[in-house]
Length: 190
Image 1 (spheres, rainbow, N blue to C red):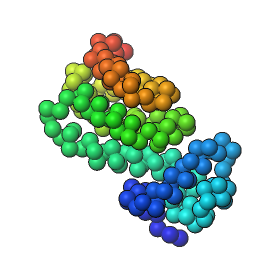
Image 2 (cartoon, rainbow, N blue to C red):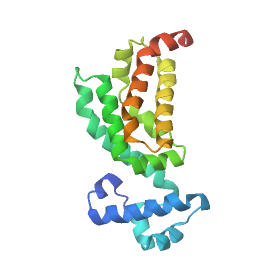
Image 3 (cartoon, helix red, strand yellow):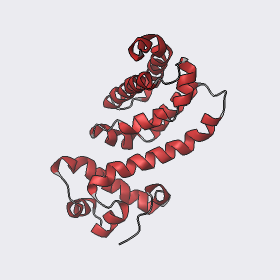
């Protein structure tokens, strides 16, 4: 059995990216029909072996992309998170720009109702959020509700096509939820 290589390592190869794009296009168009690897290969104009090099099974495509996107995002944001003086607003702005750059992939998550990737991305900023919102220790319940609110804002933005024109408005709404989270949600935690 071939050893599975991480998607992020393979995406550096131009030919791999081209084939991956064909796979994703077929997957997004035909996932409701329960597409098999054989049908996917035929529609994408690729061999079955090529599909298996990219993904072990069609059901793993979403999880493969979850890992890939989260790794890319982590790589991008890690340096900024270590700095004390980076404003939370800037981190959210960078996250929204990252989503715009990967619009097609986030559109795929949206089609599948997969909110987990956004939750995981926001959780990377958890310490900054707690500090900014002046939340008490052990505020997991507040954070859980807050993260869900922000995820829904981004999800709704996605339903409208991740419009670049709405970027400032989405950022403003996220910051409103963040700034008011302590007052709004503290009574729930007690």
